Image (tube, rainbow, N blue to C red):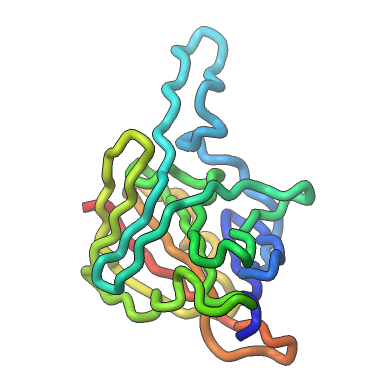
Length: 198
């Protein structure tokens, strides 16, 4: 099965095509104040920010998914990294979003398939509302999320604001590729899973 096609991430960000998901958007978004990248950058006279914990694992027991998490940043051109195809069984946390368990949308991306075969989020389409998602950090703390909705959307009309826009909730979004294939063998849709902290 061909590698994942384009996957949209961030408000509004462009994902890189690294034999994986990516999808066109307008321009890179600023880093969230909740991320380690922004921690410690307090304004003059303000108390120093506390470094956030780093998420290290995601688990979805109902569909048998457990994966360590790599950190995904930006490429030199401002596009968002995706996990390399040879690490298709490992999901990634985008450090430009919120830290899972903190206020705001945290984004975890994983391949559906790569040129090496089935990947970490191959069975994500089987997830149902009410399912539990657990994200564990490097301090051994776990944040639990309950799935509230899923949708498969065309990559040409990715709901950037809905996925990456500000929220008062402790939100989690899982994103992978979905749908039929185009003439180049790339999936034409993205599957988005929405969840909130329980």
